[in-house]
Length: 252
Image 1 (spheres, rainbow, N blue to C red):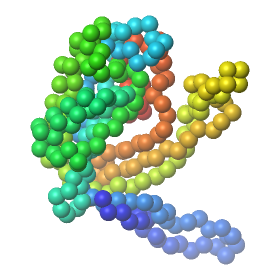
Image 2 (image 1 turned 90 degrees about the vertical axis):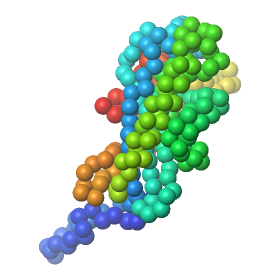
Image 3 (image 1 turned 135 degrees about the vertical axis):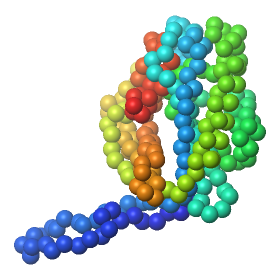
Image 4 (image 1 turned 30 degrees about the vertical axis):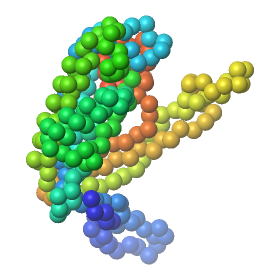
């Protein structure tokens, strides 16, 4: 994407009384990109009884139901002119091992005809989606992991094809703000002289909220992108339901 400053309000001027010391600004400059853009998303919720344990403290292996559906989102980006593409695949999962990731990239690359170097996979990192590791196949619900991963590859392939076919000129306008949802979670245990994973009220957390508004040339809203550094672990280890955690509520 090409980047250039964006003037909101067109820089229009107005008369300000001479008694006014600090006149209101008539426009605000914010970062902007121009490119071709498309976004497709779909439901990728696994079976409700798939292997689920993501916590050492959990007392269950299988999920017992669905709290909120999981989503896969494919964002396609391309310059206004030229054949270069970038496909950003965002999944409501926590992590993937190398084998699982390689299988996904191969499925999408071959199925959608996309070079592997044009694909980036990111995760919402929810700890309530289940751990989709093939090494867990012999555990309760683990027999469902492989069929689910194969279905996931097929679904993401469909979304990638759809996104590539819907590319159109767009403007991306960026903004930053603050949100106090996140908290510092590295706590120094003085008694044991060790770091513990726990709420540390004495240290600040990164509260930066990054947003981007994507609109077409006719000002139609195409997407709203959000990035926020807060661990999706709010449901914690007692939860037995499949969930995207707070990112799912944020999207809704």
